[in-house]
Amino acid sequence: MNETDHLDLDADPTPVEKQIEAENIALAEEKWKADEEALAHAEMDKKQDSWTWMKEKKYATMFKEIEHRLEGALGTGQFEWVDRRVFDQVFDQRTLLSVYKLMQQGHIDTLDWPIARGKEAHVFHATTPNGVAAVKIFHTSNAVFKGLMQYIEGDPRFGGLRRRHHELVNIWVRKEHRNMMRMSNHGLRVPEPHALFRNVLVMDYLGDEDGPSPRLRDIEIEDPGPVFDELLNWLRDCWQKAELVHADFSEYNILWHQGEPRVIDVGQSVTTTHPHAEEFLVRDVTRLVEWAQRQGVDVDLAEAWPTYCIDHSSSNPTDSSSASSIISSTAPSSEGST
Image (cartoon, rainbow, N blue to C red; front, side, top):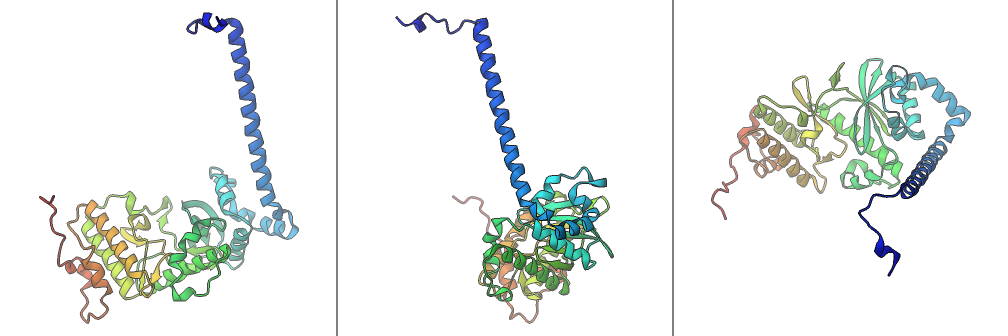
């Protein structure tokens, strides 16, 4: 018979067993701490390697020249509450040089706190000689841009693009700038762009001293019907006048600014000649209709409105003050269907 056959597995551990257990736990915790410290040192070494260029005299001089104007992004001075990791995520050599260039040109005075962040970019509150602005900094090391080629290929304005990542990012920034200019010139409510250099775009700040304007997604609209009409007009005018389609139209990309909707994030917008333009338009309108339905608006034009938009032959377009009047049919009721 084995010794283990006599063991009482339900018995309390003896003092010796308790001591052995405590020693094992201490050893495990010590190893865990050592592993954590090794990982932290590895991360620190990696970060230091990526910033060795800052030790070069010309870059050190440049950074010293603008450091006090980057307090918000650095999380120093009056901005100590800012997460320093934001700086490490966004500001590589290429980006700092771009910000420096825009400061030298007089387009940016100070770069303050982050007001929005996404997969492709961070947006910062900034000051300029003409007042406040928003500075959108596109990530230069994020592979997500490789999935956005569908919005560039087929756009005649950006032909012959080579697929090197930093060039793709720069093209995307130029594309957003040109789309905003084109929309703004046709009376569409978007932030007006002011300047760009490489992966940095300076544009209107939508907000006040308390913070940026909220997204349509985050507020309740007392009377959503007129807002739906206005946004429907926006899509129509964008297609017919600016000859663009937003291609990512949703409540997440619309800000509620001073009692009016303002459309943002137009980098992916394509011309009406793009091979997928009509597909993008149908998707945009469908999302708008779904938002309106969630707000209690009785509307269904996922098919009727795209047809109206695409028809350039109409010599008597619908009055833009009553966009919902073009809804001539609704989807049949599904009640009683099997």
